[in-house]
Image 1 (cartoon, rainbow, N blue to C red):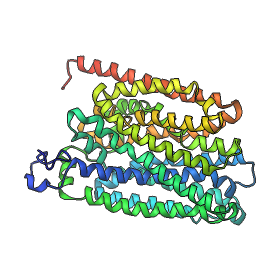
Image 2: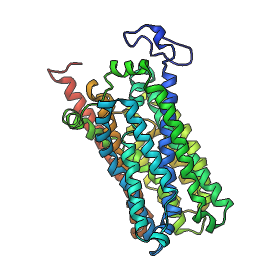
Image 3: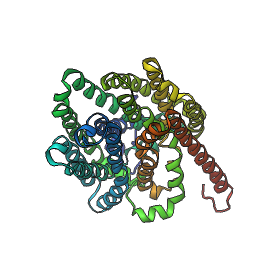
Image 4: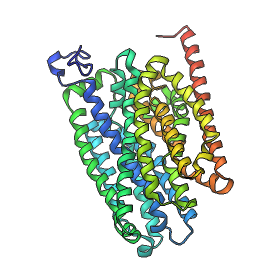
Length: 447
């Protein structure tokens, strides 16, 4: 059952001989997962940063900076609305043509929509059509993201040793801080080395070209794994095959809802320490965005360490226990986070470091706490839908809502918004535990 000393093998999991699976290991899956998630989050953060420092001036120069940023955040949210629609369509493609065809089409569409943003003409060139075109491209990004679900995170979790499930659950989450670090570094470089006019004219476009190149690399890296006969057989043996969305929701609707709201504290905090603070500093302080982007890079490194630490902690105390405890910690953080963010350079730095440590511990386990409740037949599609809805309700509108609250009622109201996310997580986890006990006590329980 062990292919090498570095990682548990998946050999023997299927009916084929061990020789057929010499190259199929949890370590290989982990690499594919990290590459895929990092590329997706890099796209995400390139667009998010541009939503603060570029689009308000390029697309909405006819309104004040705050209103332009709010318009930009509204367009930002369109991708999260389109994502479940993309999942529904691409699941049909998966069933008919296979996972490789689905990934190729989805990543090509994602890369095309992303690189097309680099050629976006501004309001001065085409007027209001600039905002319309940006909206269409953003919807294209979200639609394509719905097709990038490859099932590798679920396969990794299913093949993880029983005592190391927390460790393997955190691996896909590493893509978020890694993607942020690269995106922040690129923008910080161009902002600091170019004049404001050159940056707004052409400098900001280069990170979108890099995003396209990374998508191409990620496509081949992921296809190398998912289309091999060994992995195709493993997906089938683990029942990680696409099911119709309507049928999945009918069978797993309860668990999808719980899975959507269980990580809400993590997802709310996610934007509180990434997109929103950049907009606040850019709009309401005299600081330039380059300094804060560097702070984000350093804080994201702390986030990587915290995500890694969440693995052994979760294996020791349980993933749900850790998620609940981190929600309580996030609730406490919401009480003084606004004062830190409004406390000058030192306060901003402390806000980001503490925020990313909390985010890493909670976000590191946010994807696997409820997914184990899905039936084998529906796990592939249900996991994809749960991820879509969690991002939609937990993160899609977070920058917009937070900026509206902060601009109208002050930063303290943002703390209240973060507190509400923590409350939703605790409520969802409580309901999940109660339903689990009821299922285990039921006379028809099959487990």
